[in-house]
Length: 91
Image 1 (cartoon, helix red, strand yellow):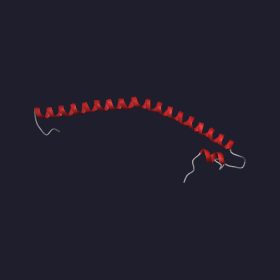
Image 2: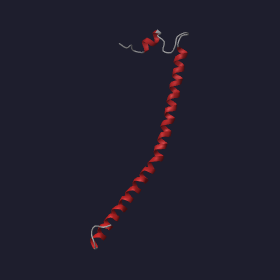
Image 3: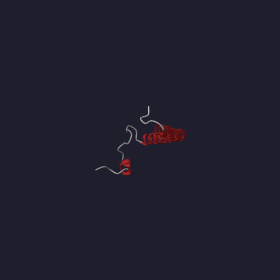
């Protein structure tokens, strides 16, 4: 319900309608931009997931190799002389 009578109320209503249309167009533009980015992000997620799986597999193989190199009866990262020389000691 307009507060002003006559031509001024029509102008006010037109301004409000125009602002609503502009806002609607802006929302459409922003929604389209978000829709465009979703497939790109999904592709990136698939790529990163694959890379993570590769790194985890490589790490598992290295850990198995370390365990195979340890003398019998010693666990992973044993205290053998070779390991102590290869890694600096903490103080």
